[in-house]
Image (spheres, rainbow, N blue to C red):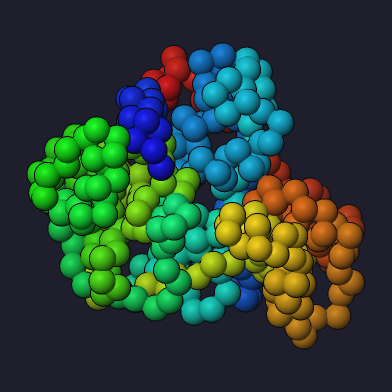
Length: 324
């Protein structure tokens, strides 16, 4: 990310709220994988998609993918904004933390609980990719110093900014108020002084969270927790007898290399569908994959066609309520 964009995000962050609530859900029963519900917001003329996203614990790319026809900075009075607060849990063990880089989201399963807490994240930009693999949190530090490596100091110098070897805690520290150190050398989960960068590829490889989210993680005492970092643009899972698909746009380097490669989508659907005798709507699955809107959609028919439709919550976000 250029220094100019970094400054822009920093200034815009002054006008954006922290989100209203943590996205915490009870784990579904009977092997189901879908949590949460979609929310719709009726925009006021002051609202922006990033502000609405931040208020609901959603990242920038998530909110713009779910609302491709809206101007992110001026959705307009009365516009219906889809807030994607429904998720398919990543496959695998529901323990520790799972970071899915493709959807820019973290899932945390607190020990000795039946819950999952999920947070939006920002990840490494192209050329500074956040690695996939297994890791563990080895330390948690409040008000951390930042020790920028020479490569980052050189990058800043090209923009005419002299960066010292140590940046003390405060508003100029990009680590924010908390950092969680991984046993992957050089990689952290941390806060940020530019909250609008959450949900974007803006870091030098570390994982950024909204300030309130990293504070909450810090207070949960995650030292020793295992971290699984994956890159899965397509997820499939069950809810109440129906198979759902959630499709995110692959990261740019993968998309540029392979284009719209649906092999991983098909493989994920087949994995989740194994052992079930119910027809899959492959046309609907392909349409979702091509749109990459990140919204879980059912790709099998309901068990009972007479079942009432799922309800969608409609809320309003107004600057008069102190949210913008």
